[in-house]
Image (cartoon, rainbow over all chains, first blue to last red; front, side, top):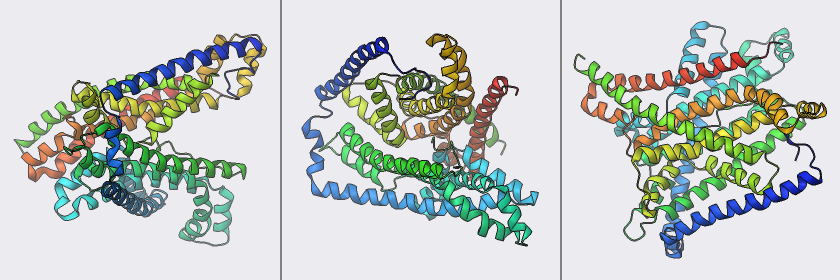
Length: 275
Length: 216
């Protein structure tokens, strides 16, 4: 523990910490125990509430629905990378006529709630796009806008000498960008891009609201059925699956970031992973 | 158009009144809970640290929609009876508290260890070192990420539209149903409201940042 706030504890502080450990530990155990007890006596987490997990058809249905959710997220991320790259280059353009519209588009999609985009696309153009199309396009616009900012920061973070050297041997602007800056920038942007994948995957769950038959929708079908009627148990299962996937992705991002830092690379930092 | 514009403005006013009310309450609760969690995560007491870490990892990695389902569909089955709006506020606050915690913790961590060591070496107590040396520097580093968290919260209030709260985003389907030909107007009207909220939050953050800035 090397927190800025505390000295290395001496004997008295260690005794205090021991008391804190006992009191704090007891308080947390009491809190969690009370919560668990309340859920148990209200029959929200009793064994029969979890019985749906033993029905092969239901588990297979959940697995398939999870694949649909992952597919939507992957499609959206892929398209968002393209969208982000185009608008990042646009924002770095030498022409104000290109720069300004790109700035407006990027800032607009970053500021508007994703659900508003999804609902608008679905209500207005759902007859043509379907739930999948509406969801994926909305995710692409939002995540693409965030990625555009990440890409721009990454390209700008490449040491200036690289750009100057490339120009001085006569490269054109697109060559400098694509051959010199982008390959070096991608490394530094990887952690930020992975963090954004976590955000996109979580946001894919919003597809439930417009009836996209993804993971959350499948869970909804289970707990709204008369047979089960167990929203808490199903909700915990849904949450657990998302937590496992997202936590693994986050660890990967942290791992990559610390490895890059050890190599002395400046890593692009984003705060948009807050969604 | 004569009929549409006043109606649009009236519904935007109704919708954003609810959005802002939810934003205010959930921001307040998330701020308090997040600060307590951050204090737990930097405390020297292992069980408190473990609790703070688990809370953050659980709620930061769960989709907001799933939390809403657990609250709106789940809590009534265990006897919790409150309005849809308060379900939304509690869900948003629970979710956002994990991000507030991380913003504050990363802020505290940006303060150089030498600062606290120096303050202790000239004989300051824990309270003095925290209050006069560490926190004033940490707050500066906390403002920008905290602003992003609250901007995300403002946008996340939209999810409540799908769970029984008619706030700004919830007005969209009504507006499109009643005024089908003004599709894009309705969308951009609501979007503009959110853009203004985002601009106000980042403006306030910028103001605080300038006030706290150190002249070097």
